[in-house]
Structures are given as C-alpha cells and as structure tokens.
Image (cartoon, helix red, strand yellow):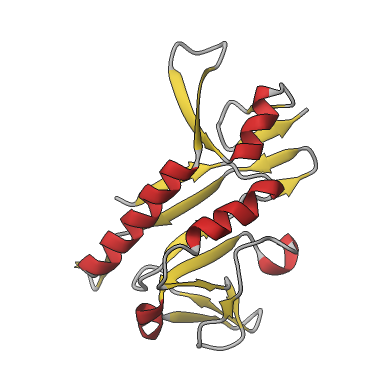
Length: 183
C-alpha cells in the first residue's frame, strides 16, 4: 500500500509549495521525460508548459540519483523513470484546464514486486518520503465539507490561494474530489 496525500494548489500556490520542498537540503527535482537513461534534473516544480512537461515530476534525494532505473519508450524516443524499483517520490502537480483545477498528489510505494517477490525499498528512503508528505500536510489548509447528497464528511487539502477561491465562493470541489471547479 502506498503512502500519499492529495491536494489542490492553484497557480499562485505553486511557488510557496516549491519553496517548502526546497527546505529538504538533499532534494532534487527530476523531469518526467528524459532524453537518455541519465536523470534530467530540473530547477523547480513550477508548471510552465503542461503539454511539454507533463504533470508529473519526481522528488529524489541526491544520494539516490545513482539508484534511478529507466525504461526506454522506443515509439516516442524518450526514457521514463521506472518508478517501481526507483527511490522516487511522485509529485503529480495540479494542472488547470479551462475552468477546473485537477488535484495533485505526493505518492510513493514502500515496496514493489520483482520476480514474484516483494522487495522493500530502503528504510532511509521511506523515512525521507514520509517526512516530505508529513511536512506537506502541515503546509496545506484543511477544508472540511459535506456534499448535499451524502451524509459523510470529507477533508480536502488546499494551498492558501486555492482555499481563498472556496471561501469566496468562487470554486467548489466536484463530487469525485479530483477537481476544483472554478465558477
């Protein structure tokens, strides 16, 4: 079972969250698309061109760069990180399309299957990834809500500016929870 947090960051929240991630001295940001089987280190996690970059980047400790595995995608002539065996934390960034904002997520698997055997990732990687997720939880504002058609309560994690959109009644979370619909 993976460890994760789902959240909403609007464009104005991206820099603050990027700065939070930079508080981890040993962190590197890796591109989703790579031109070779060597990790492409990027400067930050800010979305500039969602079509060229894709929505995912990877977070990795500098000492783990040597342990990154790749898969070659011949049809498109690029390399992707083989994230199952690699010590990487997925960062699916919040991308906006028209009048909605897709949820983002930090996520990792502490173990994976190879040759029908469970393989545990390093304890240090798991502790580091859990600490990134825990710090992210403290960064976000909690928004507790209930859908009119449900008797259950829900909690969403939002960046400060995404929260303002809800508080000012300029946005609402769709029923599946995966999109923030901007009115």
